[in-house]
Image 1 (tube, helix red, strand yellow):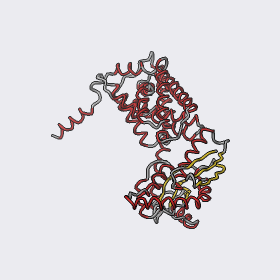
Image 2 (cartoon, one colour):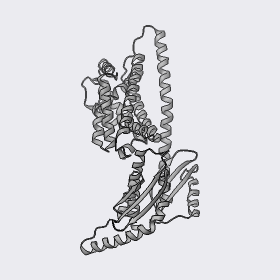
Image 3 (cartoon, rainbow, N blue to C red):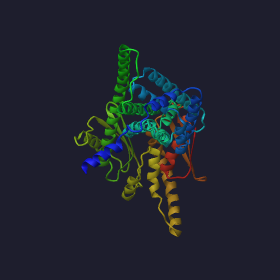
Image 4 (cartoon, rainbow, N blue to C red):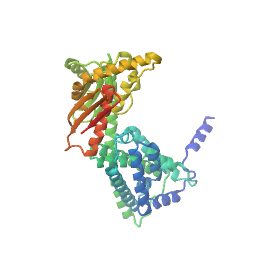
Length: 453
């Protein structure tokens, strides 16, 4: 019985039956080149993906991934290394380079001329590669080469194109280039490189597992020379990729430790970590935005001293604690806020946090609550404006000055801001104005704020 089940299992996972070796090699080679109509398709896909990113539309981005021809030259790289085909390898690298540059240029051009171009969730999600992205790239490549190698072709390729998401990261790199945001550019391009590398690696492994024949050479000396060049190329690719992968592992481990530390040592006694970031450096920095009662300098020093505890493994880190004054949030609301924390940046988290005060009241009770809330808001605004003008500076370091006033007749807070024009373009200043408006609306608990320059 056991032997029968073992045989059944082996037969179920055996890839070799149904493999079309010659057809697979020809199919990949025939679609490697990015020229002529392929360039037009690629350019259109880059613009569509950029529009999807700009409009924060997942459906449009998926459409761009489906029509993008970026997958073929990456499969070509893995195949050519697997069968020692130098000519196909060079052609694949050339096509992939042309495709990457074309997509980068088209997306950069789009984000230079678009009147929108806000930094949104779809763009943010492709600026910080994680171990999950590595898994998606590798197993997406496995699915791609396995489906391509079948005599009876499957419908897996469109799904692979969506899963591996090659086009969006290169377009986000174009966004970073257009806005001279180099952290976004390098983060997104790094994600594209990781996806491409692990797709090629999985293709190589499956090709060798299926024992695709090596390319025939004129003589043994030529074969040995080509094999050496291929081995050198693999090493040149593997070493930096291995270092990058190790860096991702270390960063993810550091974020996990930082999250454990903040939950244990900061998220208590009425305090709530609204936003947190980890920055690599010497030393590594854990930045946390905290709402609740203010820690004095002695309390902050004691928390930082706990970083050295062996249980956290953060002795080489520095804690940058940014404290917000939020005296109206009680313990029960802090508990509700902790459940609502999302994986986004400060503005969105803070907005959700303070919106927890939106309670349901009916009839006269609700009317009385609203009237009292309006009166409290007016008093808070008058007293808090000077404090907030100082409080906002750490979140917007390019902000040179901000002056706010409240007009009781229109019930509107009006702020005039001055940005460092040497560091920010006009379009970026407009986006920062919108971010300042959101910050003030949440901080002042008002429905309308106008920010101008």
